[in-house]
Length: 135
Image (tube, rainbow, N blue to C red):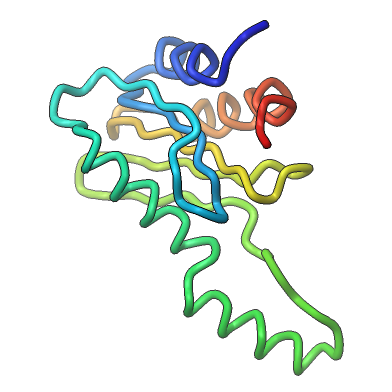
């Protein structure tokens, strides 16, 4: 059986200019699996990136917006953000919540030479392999 770490490694190996991939527990912010090829991606850095990713999906301001939408729509709105792409000066971050495991998220970080379509194709293609291995 393939492990989460092996799937993260295959993502990094298969995507041009990929730097790292991780599976994150969205409810706790803990890393479930990680693989990277960057020496300065220390455990502290990885934990901080995981926490920041969780905040983008389930942070306090997101919860506030969901509560406001719930009031406006007349039904509860929760966990509405499913995918996020973030661009920094030197990187792309592709983030997706597992559709059938809403407390697990995949993050792929690439350099800016990566093709955006290929990044999303790789991330979405990995979902069926990752989801069964998530809690």
